[in-house]
Length: 477
Image (cartoon, rainbow, N blue to C red; front, side, top):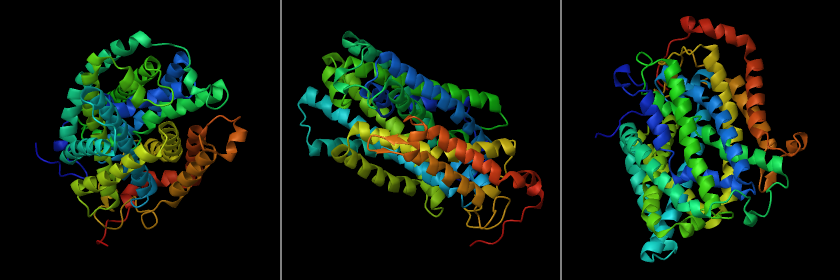
């Protein structure tokens, strides 16, 4: 299969041969991995019992999916990735906000997937072959996972789609075996080793779990969905069908692995760490399936994340090819893996990462969705590519390529979100107004969206007719 040559340029309709089933395969197959499974461990590690953990994950995932899934329709109409598509709202240069947000999201999740997958692999190999759990072992395993991940990401969408189809079946079977393996020691009570509720009370801790373990899953896809739907043709597939596929794919692809993570956390008594207790509590017959899940699942998920990172860097640096951009970000991701392994506490690092990125990314997604509703899904695909061609003009040129009100709205929303976040090592000053409950997701999205509506109210009507009088794209710069 040839290496995909397309970056963030417009995909011709003749090449848009994927369908809603392919979208569901990717969202299911790529998420059945330890990098997603480990989020199900967070609620038990916060001190919640089984039913409270399950309810927080389900509530957060459903709410987050209702908000995130419509973003799949944007790239269905623009035939390019979501960061580039956001140029309609932020300007052809201002859409760099989305590229940076997407790059950070994918970077963190790629590193997390390789990190936890490698740790479990070393643990299993230690039990099977007495492999020492030293620096050299971790370095070799991380390097092997990274090499396989880079190969899939560089080859591109078609290879990753084929991989996801296989993983959606294979990983489901491995998880079913996992339920059988850890069932004998399963308990529904809170794990005593967690030391009680992380935030001191049930509801603040439950809300934290809802955001950190539930909402964070769908929010991770706010810039990724377009990577897949740009290959679906709106001529052959309706928006409703694609929306339903995105919704079902996200729900199944996130709830199945996360609830498996919650189940195994209670079955393995994994309160303070996940990878170690998971391996130690595994019966001997499940070690090989666990090794397969840790390796194949990690490559599938990290491959898609790395693919998205390559597209986002390609959008930031138009002269770089997608393959070169992918290799460059892979080096950065591997550095984060080693830092995470040696310097970070897993629970604290994961919680801080997802809450901060949720606060920053949510207002961008809200503004992009408001723009989609305003333009009724009608975009000038050629005008979105002005920055990539190093040209000027077009209907999304605004002021020197920046829609200042949109960028300001995003910055204000993100700032409010950061002031309202509750991290293990930091509490925002706005928490006193919300009773100590982390409402950063709601506040950042609401404030960013409201600011955008107010600041662009006068110009919204003009944009509907601007396409007819927009300045033509001029010479390269």
